[in-house]
Figure (cartoon, rainbow over the protein chains, first blue to last red):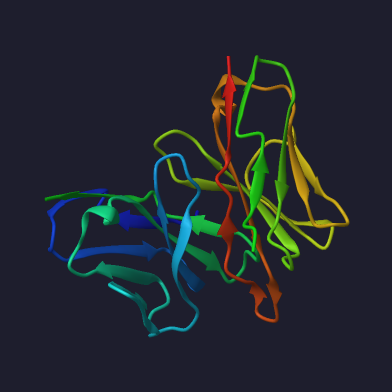
Amino acid sequence: GQQLNQSPQSMFIQEGEDVSMNCTSSSIFNTWLWYKQDPGEGPVLLIALYKAGELTSNGRLTAQFGITRKDSFLNISASIPSDVGIYFCAGQYTDSWGKLQFGAGTQVVVTP
Amino acid sequence: EAGVTQSPTHLIKTRGQQATLRCSPISGHTSVYWYQQALGLGLQFLLWYDEGEERNRGNFPPRFSGRQFPNYSSELNVNALELEDSALYLCASSKRTKSGPGELFFGEGSRLTVL
């Protein structure tokens, strides 16, 4: 079956450090999305990517759609305490219209 | 502009009962999606509705069903509840674009507990 792997599972970082996480898929995606979820809330869209090779920034966040269309990364620069949360990648396979496949999430903990 | 709204926030049922969850999409969005998020797990795709029709379905049994109304709101029904149905049920909406579903915007979810 189609597999979507997200790593790392969790990260413990100090305030001010950079964070990097990535997702790889066993099949080609036509869309990559990155979400953040705080406890008790729904996921909030951070960045959307639609073209292979696309590099997009949103403040301190940067994400890229891999050239092979099977991977994506998210970087957070100069982390702050409010960056704490679970980050999910999500992608849409070309043969499964409307269905987003989500990664298992990366738990980010920021210590002062 | 109001975001995606879901009700109820919390719902407690017993095994064998039925649960109905409701979702109102963002104004102007015609697609509604339902996802299940079990505790500590990622989001699992349940259903996608667009323009009143079911467009895609995830790997869930038929006792998970739903519908979309003419005003694009939606409800998710879960029949014959089982303990493992306990989860956060998230609704999302999007505009329909030429290249397919647009970016999904999520509600805060409905927490279903089955005892």
